[in-house]
Length: 175
Image (cartoon, rainbow, N blue to C red; front, side, top):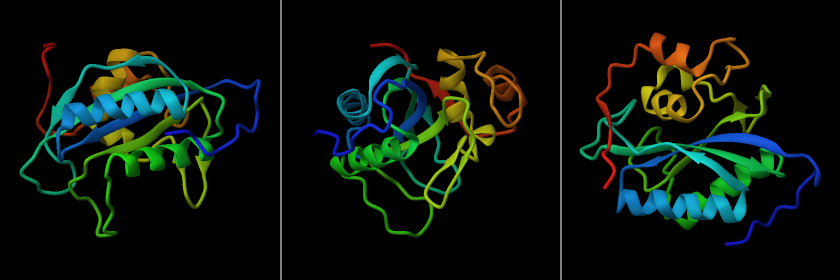
């Protein structure tokens, strides 16, 4: 799948952290496919966390989620990154009913884009719920513990220590 979006600043490199997960279908294969498509369509994958298994957050579902965080170097803008992420979700059979949280094959969230604060109709960065979600903070902490949240001024490691999320989560062992 090729990205249909031209870069807006061909010599500007951006660092984006993506939260990637899903709970339907072959979850591990979906994560592998997402990483490959992100590398093809968004940019160079610099780091990927271990896989974390977590119970659904904000809704009830029988299947747990597999989650990772990836650090990506891209020449795309934040809007172009979002558009490409949505294309990748669609390629991996993500459907949206518009009824809030639900099971899904793939979800790709922009957690951070450089140290920018973005608030548009389509995109809010940093992701507004990151501080409440251990399934994002733990994998992010694994790959970039000293990254400073541009709104709170706290590192990811500090935020993980302060997070009150009591959902079940565990790192999957390497196979």
